[in-house]
Image (cartoon, rainbow, N blue to C red; front, side, top):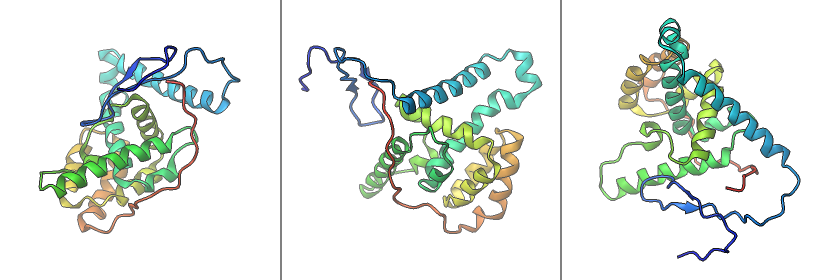
Length: 222
């Protein structure tokens, strides 16, 4: 049991994934507020702007969603796919991140997924590539940065094509990717589909590495 100061926040954050324990915020509520962190403020503004865009798409009426399907469900399929490409190609994808994305948080998230996959395989248990096949992370901080990064990449056709070609998932991944692309927007289908047909079936060696230099990132109090 962790002993906390009476003035520490006890709000619990959800567990980051299966087999991990939840943790409390721990921020001291009696701390004197310091000067505003401009970097953290800019990061938060970036994420809130992205969140506003998500909410606007979620609240499209039926007529608007029917008239422009790429603004509705296909947009979210795009984000889901690109998020998985980021993780599957990591740390190759890090070079395409805009300034306000917390790369260290994504680094930790991908590391946990790969460790889980490796551990399961070593134990002789069925194990799929969680980085490529898993859903969004449960941790809200990680999920926000990963989805915002995917939203940024969605408009970067060159970077998106490079991500697809960098993932070496073999034939099973290629088949899955071809099927999933049918739900995505025309723009993502055009970029990713051509790479799938030309490169992935050859099972070429991907550009995925094992480590990425860390950079300092601001963190909020909770």
